[in-house]
Structures are given as C-alpha cells and as structure tokens.
Image (cartoon, rainbow over all chains, first blue to last red):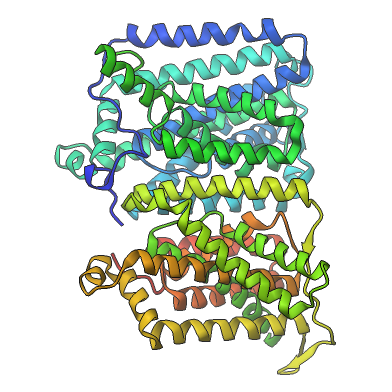
Length: 341
Length: 285
C-alpha cells in the first residue's frame, strides 16, 4: 500500500489545494476576526432559547473538534479516527481530576489537555514508527477509540458507566450559563483557528505541505516527516482534549455518547470533508452547515439519517475536495484573485 | 477449559465468516465497504418478512441469500462505479465515505420504519454434547453452516478456474488482465459473493441472538478488525484470525471478565496489525 499522496495516487480526496502559501499575518487576522465577529452575534439571535444555545455550543465544539482533526488529517495525512476518544480523555480527564481528585478546575483542564495531547502523540508515533498508511492509521486509531469506549463502560466506578459522570466542578459558575459558555467555546475556536493559521504560515506549515503533497520528496528535501507528523498530532490532540474538557464542563455531564465514535468522529469527518480537507476555514463552514442540517432534520427522528447519508454521497461524488477549495479554485480561475486561501 | 476453547471456536467461526465477505472485496477491489453490516441487516429483514408472510424457514433463508447476492450486484453497478475510477488510497478513502453514506441511509430508514424488528432463526432441540461439554444447538448448527461455507469457498478458490481467476486478480491485477481475465467481471462476481456471505452472516448470527436493525455498524467494525488481522483478501486468513480472536475473547471473558475481554480482543488485533501490517496471511506489498 503506497503511502504517498503524489499525482500517481490522486490527491483529490486529501487536500493539496494551495498553490503557494501566503505568509501575510494580516491576511489571516482579517478573515479570522470576521468569522469570530459573525459568530459572536449568534447569541443575540438565539439567546432566549436555552435549547438553541445548547445546539450552538455543540456546534462550536464541533468547529474546534474539526479544526483539531484537520490539523492532524488535513495537514499531515494521518487519519485519526479517535477524535471522540481524544476529546473524551479531555472531558473525562477534567471531570475526574476536578471532582474525584479535587484539583482546581483550571489545573484539571490543563492536565486533561496534556493527557490527550500525549495520547495523540503516542498514537502518531506508533503509526510513524510502523509506517502505517492512511487506512491502517485509521484502523489502529479506530481500535483505540473502541477500546476507550469500552473502558468508559467498564470502569463504571470511576466514569459512571453508561449513564455518565455528573460534574460537580464549576456547578454555579459562568461556564454552566449558556451565553458565557457560548463565548468561551467561540474564543476557543477562534484561538485554534489562529494557531492553525499561524502554523501554516510558519516553517512548520511549509513542512506540512511538503510532506502531504509528496512524502518521499519532502524527506529527500530534508523535512523530518516523522517528527512533523508527531508534532501535528500533539497539537491537534491537545485541541481535541481541551475542547472535550470545556464542552463537558459546560454541559455539567459527560457520558460515553458525548464522545462516541458515531456521535463525534463520523460527524467530524463529514464536516471536514464538506468544508474542505486541509483548508483553514473548511472546518468552520462544515461544522456550521452540518450542525444546522442536523437541527433542521431533527423533527423527523431516525429518518434524518437518510437525507444525511444521501447528502454525504452527493457531496463526495460532486465536490470530493470540499466546498472551500472548490469554490476558491473557481473564483481564482475567474478573477485570478487569491480569495479564500 | 475444553468448554472455553469450544466456546472460543464457535465465536471465532462467526468472526471468521463476518470477515470473509469483507476481506474479499477489500483485497480484490481495494474497496472498504462500510455498508457491509447493513447488507447483512437487509438480508435479515428480507428473511424476517418472508417468514412473517408465511414462507417456512428454509425457503425464507434461500430468499435472503438471493437478496444478499442482488444487493452485492446493485452495489457493484451503482455506488462502486465512481469508486472504481480511482486508484490506491484515494479509492479506499472514497469507498469508505460513500459506503458510509449508504450505511446512514439504510440505518436511518430501517430504524425509522422497523425500529423493533429482529430476526431470530430458532433451532429447536436441547443442547448437543461435544467432548463432554453441552453446547447450544443453535451455535452448533451455525458453526456447521460456517464450516461448510468455508469449505465451499476453499473449493471455489482452489478448485475452479473461476476461483483461480479471482485469486489471480487479487495477487496481480495487471498480470491477470494480460492473460485475458476481466478484473471488473471478477469484481462483480466477488461483490455478489460478498452479498451472499453477508446474508449467511445474518442467518448464523440469528441462531445465537436476534439480528436487529441496529447491529449493522458493529458487524462492519468487527469484520474490519478480523479482516486486517487476517490479511487483506485472504479468506483463509480471515478464518484463522477469526478463530484466534474468538479463542482469545472466550478466554478473556472466562478468566478476566466481560468488559475487559473486548479490550483484550482489540489490543490483540492492534498488536497483530503493528507487528504484521499485512496481516496473518496477507499478501506482502
């Protein structure tokens, strides 16, 4: 099984859209600030409804999950099918550190984030050392995700098993209020977006692009492919863990389905693929679109999976690279502009 | 001790059968069919509805097998067409995403329309004693069916020219094309075979526990794990991997506890993949 994403194997599914990288920081700050400003208006619109705000908070959690997943998969081609499990290490970790071990809440979040980051780094290290291809990385991380899920169910004394863990920490603080929690999650998403954007504009970003476009060529050009893969996994998993921790605290309860494979991983993959794997703003577009679609289809219950599935099929048949790269290319061809890169 | 091993073998045969139809499609076409479990569920529903309509059990199972084969053919003719146009990992990724979409559609529809439907093929009669251990009759009948299926598969792949042609495509698609074998025809045959095998999965599983509309995803995941442990495209590997994982799982359940047994099973699978990425009997690439 070849590991390259060169022309020969077809890059159409995995990223590879940038012709050249802009290093202008202003070109990053302006669109990120615009996205943040637009999203910060949402509570003005939904603020009265607790139910709708909860959906909006989940949507932002998915924005952050998808950014972290994009950093790992989109930037360095490692298919981590344990997004939910890494977020769960963050969520359960923070809950257990804060409630069971009695640590301060900030320290718990931080520790849980570090734990998640190290786990992601370890998985990446294993995949790199055994030179597993995309699919085998996917399978090994999927196995990890399943094992984590079973561990949550099995260690019921610690995790609350199937029914979940009610978090005491932060019970009367702002984090349980819907609007402040929304802004907290929004701040997190914006920071992650900036981190990813700055990374792409740095030496690391050059290395990411090089190894994703052609691993062998990158290695020959002196890029330490293994090291950058592990870096990407460490940073991306830290994002997932921190998001999981803050989301769990804002809900006051974590359960195996909060971080389940079907509930998080499948959704994040679809969101990222819709927005555009490897594109900076793809996660935002994908997460918001699919959160909205999910809500619109909610009244039909289980049947909503049918249009959802049909949409997934249509999406990958017609715009396999995702909306943002496709639209960006189309605009570039028409105007020769550098819009949305 | 004997009981644990026998239980493990019964479980392992089920595992092996799960993987057989999955591994062939992956090995031959480079297609990860994430709707494989749903194919089994659809066949189970066809059998269930036939039985509810008054057809007796054995003809109903026959109808289910035909339905499975048809499903495979439909897959080959529709959703897999655009997938075949790609190669290498792009093909695997696209197949994974498109068949996931199909799995959503099937799961969503069945869960909405028939939320409580479940197929149970009851095998009457008391336990059968093997080596002094009483075994459930359903498990034994299921195991015998699986062994017969594997024997038939072996005869097909080793003894018939069609089977050998299929194997030649798994080993070297270009070479097969050069000696006049049409790979896309072989793929169609394998997809039909895979659909029939998914239907057999539905039947043998239903002898042990009800096959409900929600089991599709777990069937697929288990099939995927056994497939990579056994080696892509190798039916014998799937059989062997199934048996090994089944016995490990049975030992872990008996000695350590149910919840850890699944984790031990997963760890065993992960270790095999890490030590031998091509699987137990996989073709080295």
